[in-house]
Image 1 (cartoon, rainbow, N blue to C red):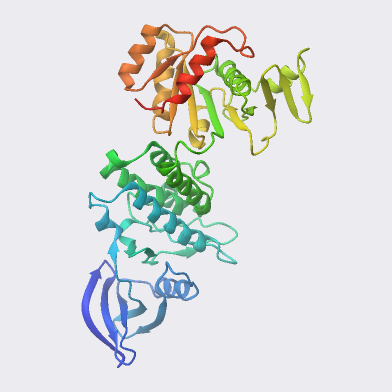
Image 2: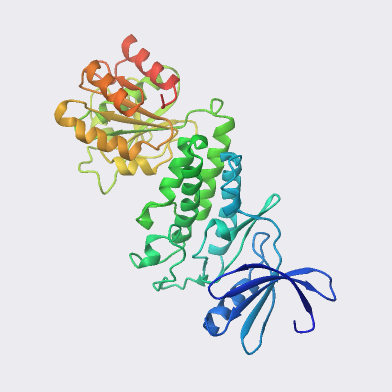
Length: 427
């Protein structure tokens, strides 16, 4: 070919053409040559792929050396990537979750590099296991056939990608943006979880679930944010009991189940035991009513203020985030979906299991079931109702004791929270 390359074997084929392994005659190095039929492809799309790749220099992206053409084909001459596709690896039952997370961390690094290009981010649009090659300890992302730049106006035309991995907006529901690639990464994780469910932790399932939200605004905001979540999941796997507890989300299945009461009691429990806990009421668009709990407590006679923190007995609350030393107790009210999106170390779901409240409790459980380290507190219900619900969902349910004053301690409440926090949230 062109007096420079000797074709050795076929590496693969697709709708537009074939990819060959070739040897550079003078340099005696290997190249991958993508042969694309002129009758099946638009010249602009071929040149676009070559031009995008030619400007990118990253260990996880193949180098484009040249582009040639004859009467029948275009030829893109690229770095030959020798390794095994993730598609093949996923069928291997020995692939651990830890290894999959490590691949995901590298993949996020490559995608973050693409999305940070100036003046316009690069969107891959076709992330899937067959386009990810694992070469020893290095992950390579290949096939930029429908990759494109995102201009300042956004990208509102569709190149459909691959069904099962392409984001919903690639089929016209939303404008395309960088979070479209985030969806595809989450879909790859979901495929691993489907094939290796016995190895998948709640934390990893939650990451996959958040990354594949139908609404782009509900996903991770960037590949870097997703990479950080994966890094935390990797560290927690080997160091789960050694790190200090920093965040607890409390959410109710519906309004009136006692979410705020229990969040205040939990904050007071931590502070009574010598830990610095800080209560925060989360404001969200879906929350029906914002009660301004901290402000109301601050108006009571017993309360005092230290800078922006309201203190009442063992309770500490603030509108700000607090210091890095605080255990943060987030009160989500009945905003179940909002709490599901967060990555608290513990999520507490408060339910009322009375007959007319059970449907809302089941719906909230279904939404939060993949959240890591989930605790379920039954409030205003009988122990028998709690046992029936626990048997049905296969998870432990804790019956909250009768409590009229959340600021006060007591042996019963202390024993309750100690028992609940000492066990993992799965049965």
